[in-house]
Image (cartoon, rainbow, N blue to C red; front, top):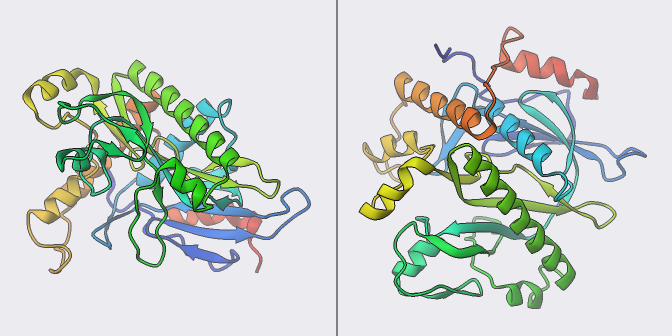
Length: 325
């Protein structure tokens, strides 16, 4: 039984320095030390779920699921690419090296899928066969496997702008990355994706596509940052249902993290109308999807941390060592 009151809607902790509050993460920057001359960043994954430019609800265990799923994948891929992780003082928290995030969004795709304007399926249906510096063959079906995995990079939009598709030549010509940086990032991204697909296949899953964030530390080394292969950064399909879906032209069965999004769209235009309150049963259903995703992806049983009077009390206690006042 899921306790709907056991949530972390925010992690606003006044004693921690240099706050930055994102849509679902609350972050704090720690000062430089001899060991970490660029400083460290505290990233706390809340249980907030965001869509349509608004916070819709708080989903029990969501923050713990995402943090621990990323932790599992960081540990499984450290031999391919070093990452930003320094420590995990709490199930919802990672302490990472501060890095300068590279200004290119790295998305790796193994299938002709997606719904956004930058997805290859959307562009393919519009008649394009050359995109992101790749040529796709004629006659492909929705959700069909690509001849090989490809990188579809976009610019990282700021100040409300839109991500724009890029080719490798444009990335280098515009000075977004050097030739050496692009070579290293693309090589590591494809190797990470191949590892992810192979390990997902062992769990009866298909890793369809994913997003990677790379950053540069104070020495110029490229590190994997943010998260990796989580249900929020990746698309997974159930392998046993994929052949029939491909044959019938239907959406393959997946971890539907858009349960709440679909519920909202069926009831209003969320960009124009007030969003109705999300019912308890929908919140519980979404929490169950996240827990199932963790267990299917990692092969481990999800054990929620119920210590502390509240989740925030537990997080505060585990981060007290970093308080500055």
